[in-house]
Image (cartoon, rainbow, N blue to C red):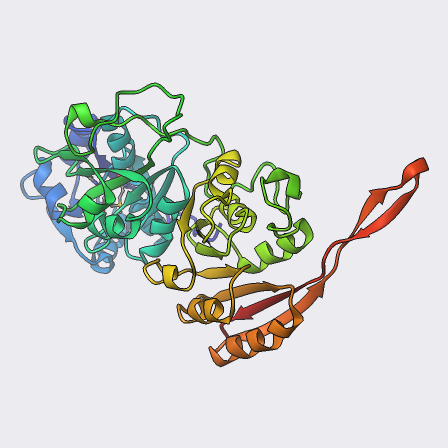
Length: 429
Ligand SMILES: C[S@@+](CC[C@H](N)C(=O)[O-])C[C@H]1O[C@@H](n2cnc3c(N)ncnc32)[C@H](O)[C@@H]1O
């Protein structure tokens, strides 16, 4: 923990303005009555009874407010900071603590808790991510990877932009605007609808998987989203390990028997271990598995938290069945690469397990940080290395040939060779 210990002096009281609705925190009136300085967003200052004559500072950039708070602490002047929801949850407490201010926090209900409550859904297994003041893509990829995600948004990084990025993924969205205020509006919508319209700030977004037809969970019949009460969808099956940092309970580099596959159309466990490690899957990243076959590589990336698009030309390939078996969400795109890659969102890393040089060229043209290729045919190795280098990648490679233990009659053991494979990794310097 790098946060400094709080400085001595009168603590600053940080009060959450409740996203669950009025009335305000029961301690608010007393805290305000004694305050010499109240800091908060204009909408929060307007929403509470600041005593006449009490100094206020509207946020804005935090620097000048921090200076005024430091001065108040040093002078022993009781200061209050108003913030939304639970200020310790993706909120201002982090910045105030980093500034060394002594704090007392009176939390209210977070906007995330409030929006799940509005939907009548549990949220203990949900991931919560923020798109506030940062690149939108990690939040988007969390929505693509996990069944229940709440996103804290910012102007220009909200439901419109997230909806656009989720087109093609089977998701239902719930947008909660101005929660806890008279302007509150809670809307079920689809990625397409969300992308096509504007949403009022502040708002939070829930991204929920569409439950498959066989979903055993009870719930109201799913009608078209955005149609009010009758359209409130059932909640998709929730993984109990739906946690951003959780490693898969069953591990990875699983034996081929863990996947349905047609003979030889699966990356062997020993090779998969290296390939998955090289792809660096984790929550917030998007991985392409091109020429997915059984989907084992993409599925293991999804088990490690990544969003995954599996591209496979054979509609009979068992990618969906395998993903369901491992309870991960993999978007399957059926069609032939490279043509089918054109409309897909750009990946952070891509695995090319099938397809020719044209496929590798099309993948490299999307500039993923990393490209991993497995090749059985030696005559394809040098062209692939040259292609990746020409596209700006530093390339390394190795040949893997695992020999597995196999039983012989009489209790003896022999080695059974698996087919040798060359694994190439291209990395952007
Ligand atoms: C810096 S975060 C603060 C989160 C806050 N600590 C909480 O617990 O709700 C700001 C984001 O929270 C969400 N938010 C805060 N208050 C809200 C409200 N009343 N209605 C909808 N969303 C809200 C929005 O996504 C907003 O951009």
